[in-house]
Length: 162
Ligand SMILES: [Cu+2]
Image 1 (spheres, rainbow, N blue to C red):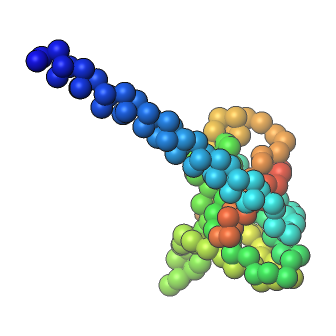
Image 2: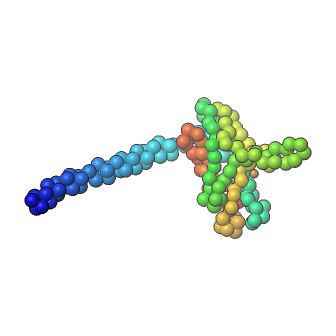
């Protein structure tokens, strides 16, 4: 009796060993889809980045990046953020003066009109490199900064370290 029970029991496990195949294929499909989506996203938008620089003020302070972004395309782009390998985070800020006090505000998104441009410059928009790495502080040269857009595209441009 016990033996027949055991043999009947072994059948469901063999059936369940079949399920890992679709289970394994699931993540694989997701991975392929993500890779395809990333490949599609990789097509850079029609933009140019000029006057790109990242200024190290003091080692203990965030570094600040400035640039001009020109949209050569016929579509409005919306800048949604930035990143760089040597910045723990690279935030979009806007400097404002209110009641005689200089402030910085977080900028979540910034539209760039078709055939238009936005300028990140002292006293206005800037990128703030929070916790710059020792490597950034120590070296001269270029830092690759990636600008992200709300449509999923991005562009990476070399910023001169000053
Ligand atoms: Cu700032």
